[in-house]
Image (cartoon, rainbow, N blue to C red):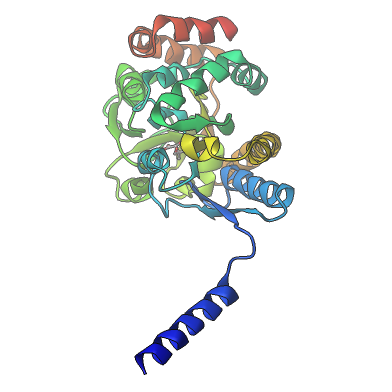
Length: 327
Ligand code: PAF
């Protein structure tokens, strides 16, 4: 009886195994990011997904988790480093906690316009910054657009640094940003992005700063009446991949990833630029948007200027001169 049972078991086992045998292995790329589905960042990932799946004939699939479903920027960078999440796209500011070279992009008023941004970031200078990530088992694949950051608050129409006195402003968890806001006379409070809407609504903080697109997409304009168009820092997103995952791909698949990122970058930047203009326009009808004159902007620039020395000590003189000479 035992022999028959064993044979039967073996037979059933074998036949069911055959029936379930995978036809061809499909490689899943798990992407986590922190912003809403209405942002250009999410649209960039959707484009990347479409391209990768199409170019690989469905042999690679991309699954996207937006809205911090898998964690905020810091957690996601760590998850990519460990390989628990394949890809993410933080702003450069939290990346500085991994490699201080990234503080170079926190120099206030480093870039004057988008064309200059793309020229520098897409050059060897931008490439050398991405290369610093390899040491952390992370591959930096390029630069996507978050945009020029603007200051919003619920208290008063700010036109000068003097008016920031005592204003509690949420900053990213980044030393240079905190220093810059204290030089302006505000009271900087580092906080994760996920907690920000509630903090603004409950007035735990009075102010925050982000590009127009994020202000609108995250509905901050509902709880922040005043928007000062400071454009004080350009924020880039960096699409990242676990380096080991990338290195283990065939050269054909690696090429698909690189080509898809390149194409998605063009589309992501184009949507970000369009949203920036459209969302600013929309908020002009619901909020008070304060345009600064050249002199007023210069006053912010002057107050923030001393952070440059701190950036030099963190990011290194060479990295700082590479960027300042290129801009
Ligand atoms: O303010 C922030 O935390 C950042 O701009 C962003 C993009 C929302 C997260 O990287």
